Length: 315
Image (cartoon, rainbow, N blue to C red; front, side, top):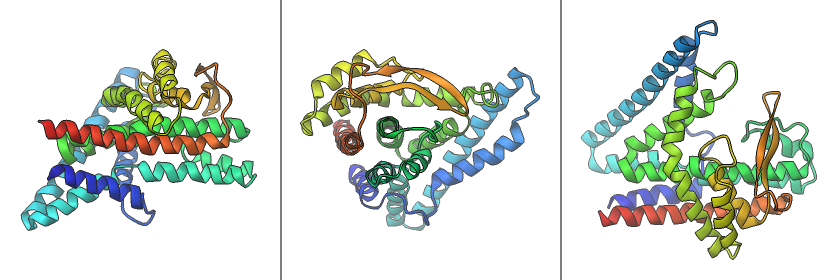
């Protein structure tokens, strides 16, 4: 029966996405991180002290998130078994991001198709960390495809992986870990030491889901009649062409499937970051690649759910 609950959550995400007026657990986790950071981060502290403060932040945020989740589930079960099921389905649905990722990519695509670079740059800035103010159409399309590929792991495959491993508490813990990384896991002067624990433990949480994404994207490419052989070849060859141990796996698979290149130099927080190319022999990105990457994302999401469900039913 549990697989049916998670299937309901998965289908709700595909249908509804994240309505802006609904309360969302990730927003609450983000507010907890911001409030805790103001209390723990001291700019003049020694690196070792900042590292320790970052560890305290991680334990506090992840631990409290899981405890609150367990409390909500316990209360729901005490009130009525059906309420407990409903609460689990709603939480799982809210912690998936398939539809919202597709909607965000489509907003950039619609702006490009309307001929407005300024609007497409603004829409892109909502979903990437790089400076978008000077990007041309090719760079905007490439950045959008990159974020769709990378966030298929963070927003879909990894949450499903941890959901099937440990239920709602494990999924909540993962989203807390991932949100910590997205807010403090930067290698700049402010967060280099304070965010070290958050960044490294997010890498660990995504390690296996990122590697599984290569297989899921290749199967998705096969089903969509794209270049699945090249998805496997480029995905394996360029899997290390990123400073992150995980990001290049999905990006390289998508680059291979579409026959395009990703990566290269980008501007983050006013600094030029010279990244290696992924699928370097491929062509430049086009707006059409955004739509194809979304299709790949949907297919990979469904394939990952099917694989995780099948394995869970075997044990």
